[in-house]
Length: 185
Image (tube, rainbow, N blue to C red; front, side, top):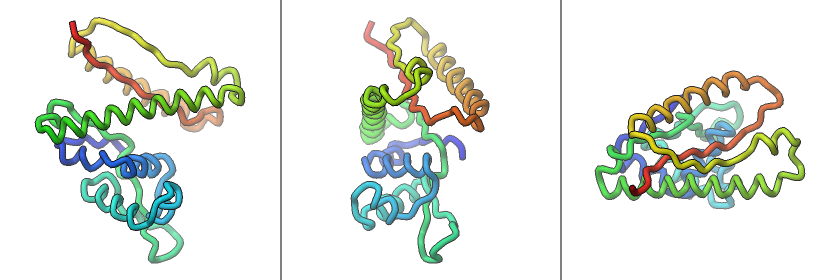
């Protein structure tokens, strides 16, 4: 799988339903699933998950895949590991700006949820995981070009570390949420 760059507000809006974004995340993390399996996981009905899977497929986020098992069961898989967009391109319309705003708030919500989960798990985590976890709050002065370079280097280095740790049994799934926003002068 690879990265999917969204080019319009309409495409990004396809992700702005809470159930859709959660289903896509599960398909990316856990692999193919049926609408029925997703309905059970999210305590909803199969009709809703089927509808949302078709909407995600319409915009190229998921696709049907052949899986051994029941011949009539339709399995769905994520097509890309990540979704990206350029704020100026997607935000060229009000619909696009609203969708991008919603996605940023979702990402901030994931961070909040991950912090709360970590705080609850601390007593059961090995000390090396407790020390490695954290959050930063930096205020630096950068140009738009330097901020773009920071993003490029961050993702490049993250790809290197993922490859290095791919087969290490000590590796765990880690949630990483990063942000860089200009502040008023």
